[in-house]
Amino acid sequence: MMMSERAEQPKYEQVADEIARRAGELQAHDHLPSERDLMQQLDVSRMTVRRAIEQLVRRGLVYQVHGSGTFVADPDVVTKTLRLTSFTEDMQQRGLTPSTTVLGTAVQPATEDVARRLRIEPGADVLVLSRLRSADGTPMALESVHLPAMGTDWSTFDPTASLYAQMSAAGITVERAAQSIHAVNLDRDQAYHLDQAVGAAALQVTRVSYTEAGVPVEIAETIYRGDRYGYDVVINRAAQ
Image (cartoon, rainbow, N blue to C red):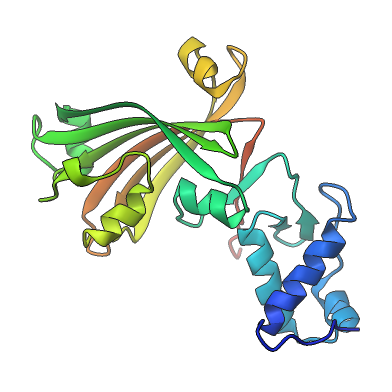
């Protein structure tokens, strides 16, 4: 039966807490009960169960495989969906404390490739940030970001904080992104910063972010540790 009601907490959050408690008694990648079973066990609606599971997915406690169900996430691996979020948001949703070490910051002339992707003139000024992103003190990712001027005084930005949050405060809202994901092996410098062996497996994610009007406002190339980061992708088979 459903746990006692707490007026200050929405029902789906109560259900999420209960499912999280049960998941904590299972092993990583164990199958959780189906939505129907959870509805019966907790005496709640399907919509409540779905909202609860969505919250747990965002928190990184469970993951879903289309057509197979919901599974307990590995606590040692940050599982990211293709939902557009910042590193800071990802870590905070999982109860981890994000931190940033700035490895380099400079205003540089845009190369032809950068200019093409940002739709600016070659040689125009772009801010280039190199950062090491960590969670609870553990290095997780190396990030290189190119930002066009956009009429913004980048000198007022804090390179150790979330860029998306600061861009939003400046009236620049990121709405969508195009990104590619590739498997790579860490070189000596990358391995040093990520506390990994040279040649260790990693994920390279290259992203171009856009405003709602389709204006490109960021190029980011991020190298994620392969042993601590994964991507969940839901795909559907096209009708024949």
